[in-house]
Length: 203
Image (cartoon, rainbow, N blue to C red; front, side, top):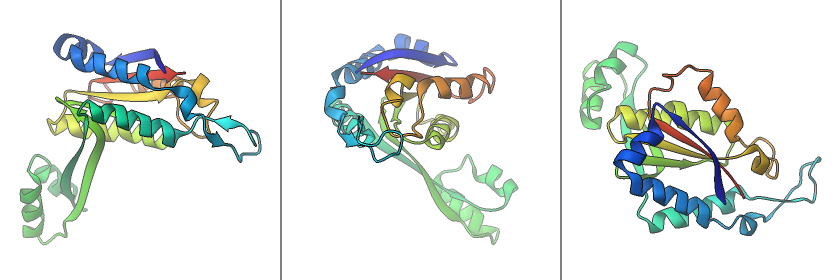
């Protein structure tokens, strides 16, 4: 596969090129190493594409995971506790997980365990490879990357998406670069408040 387009939000790419050029090279090399034709394994059952051989999100994710894991990109998870009280959430937000729970319990509220997980992280850069539905990308961009950035776990988030030309050869409902770029740009230049690199790929 190859990178066709990229969008640098809040100078995300510039940060990588200056401060972590090796990681950017690894991302480019991993994309280039994916053999797209080996991922064309899904026989469509949809009415408009019935019988067509489509690109499989499962196979593409598996290949990306194999390549990134070999370069020591690892899953990361941040745990935290939530409650129904908005003021209490604001108070406990900067605390570590254990202190959050104690503080919530001390007020008589019930703490609810939650977490954010990112697929690949290395040297304070997170990567999400997203071949899923539209809502998953929005969650990555506006919740997941942002949470890791605010929590001082990453400096930049990277989102890898299919271009429309690739998405058209996948099951319907999969998000694509051009659509998600529009969604980010229409929010204004400072939203989401995390440096990002959004990447569009195709075979």
